Length: 228
Image 1 (cartoon, rainbow, N blue to C red):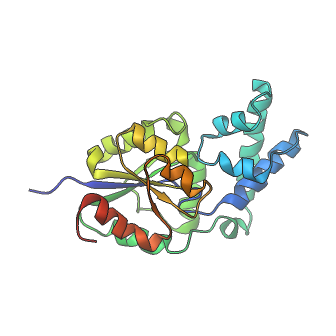
Image 2: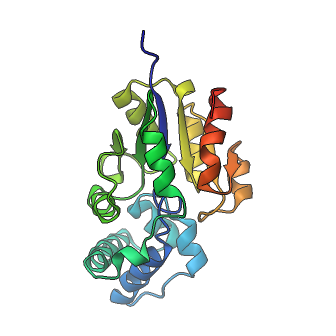
Image 3: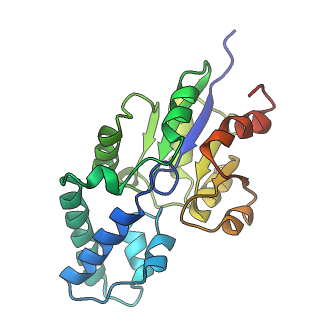
């Protein structure tokens, strides 16, 4: 009898891809388009992972909803325009070792990969095409279809699509939103030390922590008590 699948879910921005330059530039362009003072870089990176409307609401909580909606639209326009430039790939590179580990894990029997991201479907599809990642992910959960992280909807949907039990799933992410989402879905989390939230924020939610992609296979083996 074939063993049930194990599911490795990845966040994208700050976990697989270092997209901070693209995100900060698009956010600044959006605020400039509406003549609104842009938030500090640290404030922008702190909201990465949230769905865009929630992110904008956190950055300008006192702004009228109409102004927040206009900033969301301006950000989407700026980000999309930047994706069409020759510099787009350089502005959102894969982290060191990411591709090799993704290929390794995707080739292991009984292991399926997925994505749970605050990006839009259009944004994620552009990124997957940019980095040649098509076919690696058995399940893709995006902001268009779910409440914002840390709501567990993305993780629950990914498990349902792949027929995976919580004990056989794991969420890999760089923010406290990812770890809170995993916990809310009853799934363990592994935090990465190279992303946009400080490691202590991830540990505060009970996450194991890795400092490089090379450490991920061993961390998964330890989590599930199987050979690396």
